[in-house]
Amino acid sequence: MIQPIETIKIFKSQPEITVSKGEIIFRDKEKGTVMYGIIKGEVEMYVDDQLVEIIEEGDIFGQGALVHEDYSRASTAIAKTDCKLAVLDRDRFLFVVQQTPMFALGVMRSYSDRHRRLKSVMNGLIDI
Image 1 (cartoon, rainbow, N blue to C red):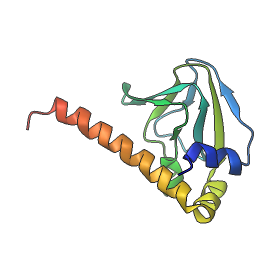
Image 2 (image 1 turned 120 degrees about the vertical axis):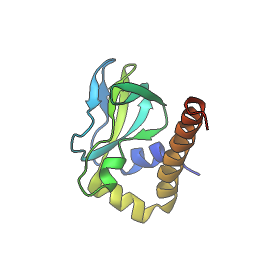
Image 3 (image 1 turned 60 degrees about the horizontal axis):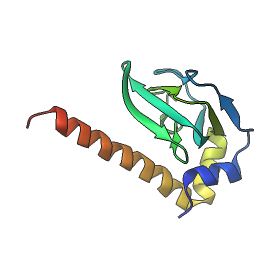
């Protein structure tokens, strides 16, 4: 299966962007109109100012804002390293989901992988 980042590179409507180490890509509660794929580098994801995840080259992030009616971000993304990012806006995202079902599965897998990692971390924090 083709990775979502490869599909984004094929279907993107906007040029790749570069982000410097330490630069904020987006903030929690902001309106989001694009999602990102990491071509090069790493991105830290924060919730309530706590580092919860490091997204690596080849993965995607920011897609949650594109599927919620209010377009709100649920986390803050900060470049851990200098990054090159592919960008996909909502219209192109919807087009790619419709035209490339494997892309939709890749996005769902990315969410599922993150959810599993979060559950693993939470299980280590909570004594059940």
